[in-house]
Amino acid sequence: QVQLQESGPGLVKPSQTLSLTCTVSGGSISSGSYYWNWMRQPAGKGLEWIGRIYTSGSTNYNPSLKSRVTISVDTSKNQFSLKLSSVTAADTAVYYCARWVYHGMDVWGQGTTVTVSS
Amino acid sequence: DIQMTQSPSSLSASVGDRVTITCQASQDITNYLNWYQQRPGKPPKLLIYDASNLETGVPSRFSGSGSGTDFTFTISSLQPEDIATYYCQHYDNLPLTFGGGTKVEIK
Image (cartoon, rainbow over all chains, first blue to last red; front, top):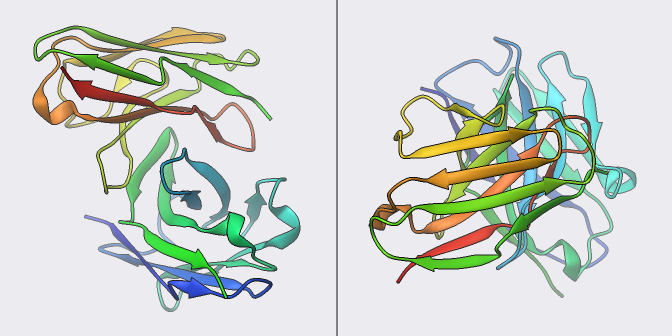
């Protein structure tokens, strides 16, 4: 079955760009009608949807982060990526990637912790 | 953005108890409402979609109901493995938003 795995630096300096990758295994990122999503969760807090990319490459972002977020896909590597610019301590969180089928997010990565600190 | 308000924020119940969580949307979302379970240190898991449909493989003690702005999630007989935080999430439009979560503990 399809599995997702996040990867990237666990520590990012303030004002720099956070870059994470989600690797899809067990299936092709290009097959089917799926949205590939990024969420985040600060320690002890709730979930925030960051944005998504469709298999065609079209994107949607949370307006609260839109000016700083870029989500892209690399079908040759079966990966999709998140870039969040100008980070501050408020961006410290566990970041999750997830697949959206027509009714919900049915496959999630295990999450990766990103700390923003100098 | 549509605001999702969950209550209670936490609850404690005994094994075998019936547990009910409510979720209220700030506007009509028809039945575009999901429920997720998040065990400590784990990613969320989809339990209920379209307000009342059980995801494949999810035990039947979990159920959901509601439409419009008011929704309910129920565990008919609480089990030790149900210790988790439960989140509602709408998908009526973008941005997708989640409720604040309900932490369920065993008494």
